[in-house]
Length: 110
Image (tube, rainbow, N blue to C red):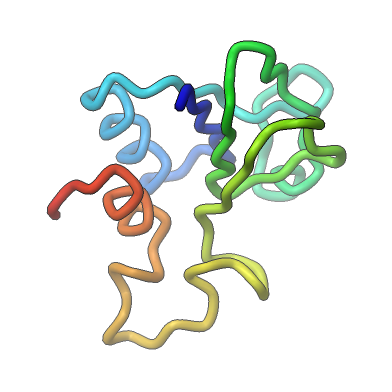
C-alpha cells in the first residue's frame, strides 16, 4: 500500500518523526494552510493534500478541513479527544506519544 504521512506543526517530536520517516524511506509532506506549513493553531484546519499517487494517508498531529475522497486514512495523534493517544496516563507515555504510535505503525522497536 502506497502511504503518505501528512505532518503537522514543527516541534521537537515532529522533527524526530521526520528523521524516522526519512530513515525508513517513507513518503511524507508537511501539512499546509494557505500554502504555508501549518502552525499549532492551524494544524487541524489544513489544506486538503493531493493524494493522487497514494492509497492511504496517515495524519500526524494535523487534519485537513476536507479529507480527500476515496482514500483510506488513519490518525496518529494525542492532542484531541478521540485521538488514539489522548488521555493515556503516565505509564502509557510511549503509546500515547505520536512518535510511539509511529513506531508501532512502522513495526519498529524504540
